[in-house]
Length: 114
Image (cartoon, rainbow, N blue to C red; front, side, top):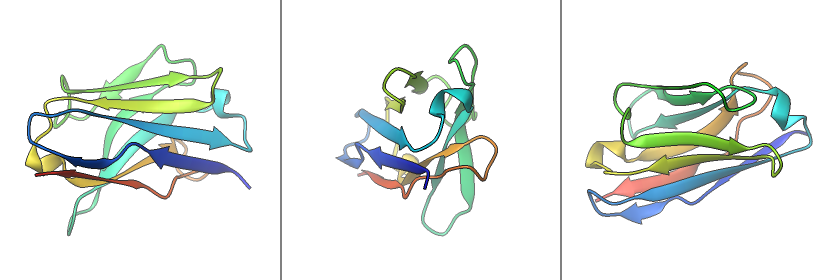
């Protein structure tokens, strides 16, 4: 079955940086727009970044715009999220998922800013 596996989360101090990766397998990754979403403790799911299938278009939530960068490498079937100037409110479980909402979603990686 289709698979997305996130990695790169961890504990970082405020103002620090992290780079998340999302490795895709068992589906035609390059044909899909992709989202990064997150869920903070006690809160709902927030879409934070979107990229289209060829990487020519990106969009960000206001909460991360200017600090986070979404990118993809379709030769490696991998999605990335570069996170800079991290804040305590960025603490959440981060997931990658296909834009259509049902093809694939990863299990998440914890990011803690403290």
